[in-house]
Structures are given as structure tokens and as C-alpha cells.
Length: 114
Length: 112
Image (cartoon, each protein chain N blue to C red):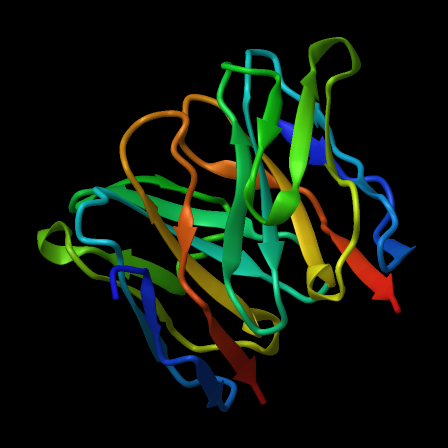
């Protein structure tokens, strides 16, 4: 399977706990993106990497959020001290360099903070 | 700044009828435009994309979209709806190929 893989698919956590999600992109793609999607909304940009470098972060990415992409392969998104407002679908996407390339999305990680 | 507006958060069509989902974009420079489909609890799947070549773009599953610069539109159409087309559809705009800006989505219901 050469698609984008995200784990876990679902995560339920108590408020205040830390959570970490993983994304494995398509191996040939050097750009990796994280988006957040809440119910009834389109995906909202969080951050992106070109290889291992984090090139852009959205203002949505508060200091409780951190993303890494060591060695330019898989990426992790960590949320510290989760809040109920963090409940959302977290989507990872990857693509080639090249303005016209579309994203290939993973199936997402649905986070529920109780 | 770039943005997209999807008119109609919910669209219902009869099976076999024309599907028309509307998308208008705002961009100060020539954009790249995309349509994605999302099934429940799934990620987004690329339907088609406009990258400044032909203005009429054909995608998967019989969908197509026409880029109209004068109207700043990129509406998605399909001549004959199928039950399997029921899903959420998102229009997105990108400039210089970095982050995408998505619309709020249109939920398509197909009535048998």
C-alpha cells in the first residue's frame, strides 16, 4: 500500500492528557501537511514540512501543539494538556513538490477529549 | 489572501439527475483549484484539479469542472447522479502550491 497512513484511527482521551498521532506519508513525497477538521467544516491548515524542515505553522497551532518530522520520513503531531476544543479529525497529507500537485490524504485520526 | 466559497451546504438530487456543486474562489494571483470528496470517517480523495492548462477539467467517477476566470468560479458537475456519489465535497484553492484553503463543504444527497 503506497497511500498515506495515520495512526491511531481513533483516540479518546481525558482533558489534560497528552496525545501523539503519527503519519507515514507516501515515500516519494517530500512535503507533509497536517490539517484539522471539525464537524461541518473544511480542513484547516496547521503546519507543513518539506523533508525534515517545518516551513510554516498556522496561528491555530498553539504552544500546546508540536509537530516533528525527523529524517524527513514519518511525522508526529503531539497535543499537550488536551482541551475539549481539541476534539476534531486530524488529517495528514503528502504531495510532491510542484504547485499543481494535489494532496494525498490519510484517513485521519479522530480525537475525542472527554 | 486566498479563499473559496461553496454555495449551498446541502444539495439533494434524484438518481440520474444532473449534479451541480458551486465553488467561487478569491485569489490575487492565478490559482490552482481542486475538488475533493470525503466519505464518512474517511480522509479526502482528489476528484480533479485545475492547474492552468485546459479550463474544462475531467476527473474521476464522471465528474468534471470548468474554470471560469471572469466569474471566479470552478463549479463541479456530473451529468447523471449515482447513489454512490452521496458524500461531502470540498473545493480548495492553492497559490504557489503550498497550503490549501478549503471551503466549508457541500453535502450531496442522492434520492433513489
